[in-house]
Image 1 (cartoon, rainbow, N blue to C red):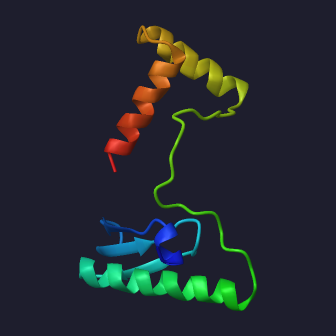
Image 2: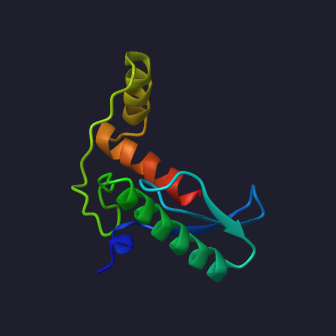
Length: 113
């Protein structure tokens, strides 16, 4: 496996930009863009390879891997007291636990992308 394979590469259509945008979160800031999805992916792979080379040339450790990462399904979220209260009340009104309510809201938000 190449070192570049350790990093998640994302190419997606951006309505706002009117083109495909390629990013590699956790390794490079910004990204590449264009009208051809395949070309954007190739350019993104090249940008990732160059970033890895720069880290190595500067004798800096590479950031943690982002590809094929396993998630536990659990995370802690800290919010202010007012938001906690509001969300808890909404969960009660929906007849759901706070956890189930938040999971449903987060899932709905990610589907709207």
